[in-house]
Image (cartoon, rainbow, N blue to C red):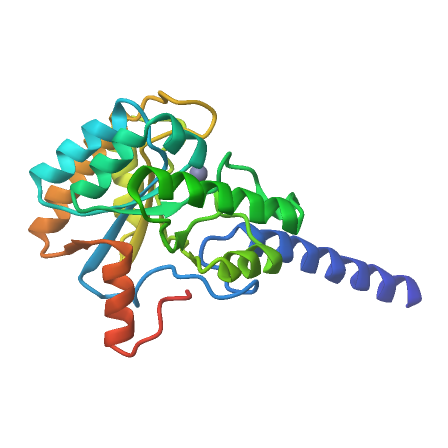
Length: 248
Ligand SMILES: [Zn+2]
C-alpha cells in the first residue's frame, strides 16, 4: 500500500516535471507567463515570421518573394548577425517589414542567469538601434525556451514575447514541398507561422527551400482570401476585436 502510494506519488512528480519542461519550450504554453501566439481560430489573418537572420544571401531572396506578393512579414534577428549585415536589416525595414529581438548569440535562455538574459537582449537591442535607429519592442526566445525570469527580464526592457502557433519544421532545410505540407496541415486561421531565413550556427545557412515554400504558401492562402499581416498588425487586431489572443 505504502509502496503503491510512493510509486504513484513519484510518477505524478515525474509527470509534473516532464510537463513543466514541456511547457518551457511549448510554443503556445502559457504556464510561464503570457506570450502572443496569434488570433483565435477562424481569423482570416496569417502572420509569417522568420527567425535567425539576417542571412546573406537568403534573406534578400526572401525579400524579393515577399515584395512580389506585396506581403509584409516579421523577422526575429540575431544581434551578432545584425552587426555583420546591417545593410540587409535596413533593407528589411525599408521594405515595410517588422523586425524583432532574437538575442545576441541565440542561447537557450532557460539555462541562463538573469544577468546573462539581460545582456543577450540588451546587446541585440543595441545592434538593432545601431543598424536601423530603433530597438524593436518584440522578442522571440531562441528555441522558444522561456521561464518566468526570461519573460520578466524581457518585459523590464519593454519587450513583448512573441511565440507561434504553426511550426514550419524548416531547420534542416527539407524540400519546399515538405515545409508547405507541414504548414498547411496546421493552419486554422489567425496563425503565427514560424519559418527560418537564417541559421543560428552560422551565416549563410541555405534557406532556398523556405523561400520557395513561402512563395507557394502565399499564393495558396491569398487564393483562399487570407490576409498576410505583421505581428504588430495582428496584435492590434487582437486588441481592437476585444478578443484575447489565442492560447490554445
Ligand atoms: Zn532562432
